[in-house]
Length: 299
Image 1 (cartoon, rainbow, N blue to C red):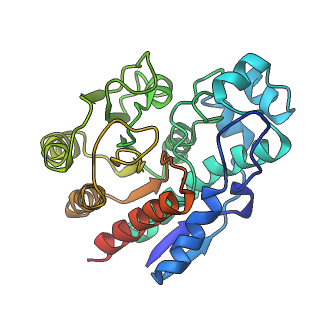
Image 2 (image 1 turned 45 degrees about the vertical axis):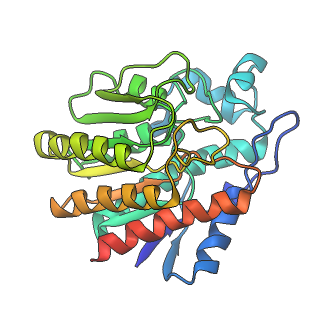
């Protein structure tokens, strides 16, 4: 059974002057229903401010909560922080935390949002306001739900914010496999970065993942995986530079879950990146990711 976390407030109107559309977070639920796959819906609570401020600068958190984010930071984020954006920015980390708790109970849980891996300590960036992966990982460890967490980032863009926020922590391993020449221009240092050249296709990608992931799972031995399951490595993605097919994304996700399950490691996924003019097509890619991860977890 797929356990998926969603809130109607994940969907927000597009803000003036920005190309970023929030509607895929509603469309992915349509895609899940359209698929006929069974799923149980869970509603998140907003992440308490104390946990956000444990990772982000309290002054920046105050700017978001009071809708007073300076224009230069809004430009860096890519859209204005409105009341609706602020609300979903509190709910999304709560959703990733809730998905992780579901994973601990059932083996797999999905947040139908999240993956805001570019957000830094004192500013958002790259369509990310608060870094839900870093916030959830910190809270899970602080509250004793896990002792060691792997943040596995297979979005096409490097998880620079996550790498920066979690730097120096021996209990959190950040692995980012991304397109070298894509955003951000200035990369941070993850625990391990695998920077790929443009145009990497299914077979080469699978080989790199197979060489990289199992040793980390065996040596670091995480209690939980937070999986940034962006679908933007797809060849047709508007902001990607890799060349995975639908079958390649399918193989990627099934391999990750099989490796986790073989070691008894719960896994929670976030949606991360996926961009294109046909937003329903992108939503179906995200939904398919959740469905196959749930299928592998149930095997």
